[in-house]
Picture 1 (cartoon, helix red, strand yellow):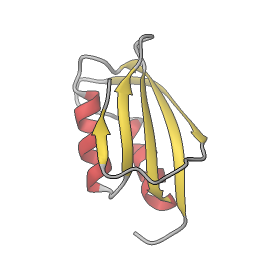
Picture 2: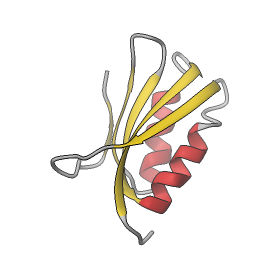
Picture 3: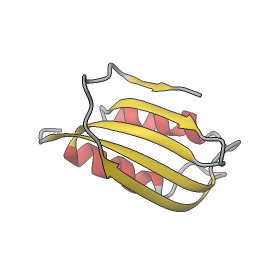
Length: 94
């Protein structure tokens, strides 16, 4: 996908831990050609950094609203961020 590159930090709330959300997010992000990471937070939410073409980032944010089969997403918030260097690949952290 061609387009302007962007970096967005996303917070997903609802039933998003213990349902395979991080693995699903990593697969979807890789499929869309995104770089970044996804992690569980102590408050029960999931946070992700999505870096790539703006169209792919937008598509990933849309997919996060659904999540994997066992998830129940309440909210997805995103904020543009500046990054010092482009991450390599997409990984699961924390």
